[in-house]
Length: 42
Image 1 (cartoon, rainbow, N blue to C red):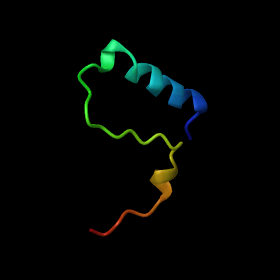
Image 2 (tube, helix red, strand yellow):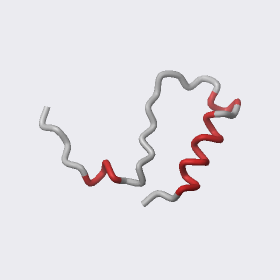
Image 3 (tube, rainbow, N blue to C red):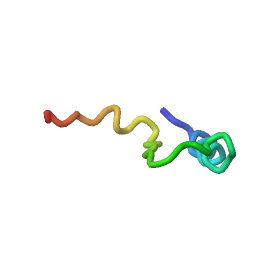
């Protein structure tokens, strides 16, 4: 499971120059919750 610091680390990285070429992405930071959800058939 994720830790609160994982959210902070992503936020810091997104605000840094290292993420300058990242556009139009969705980052799911839910502590692994979506891994336990069933995937849709289609």
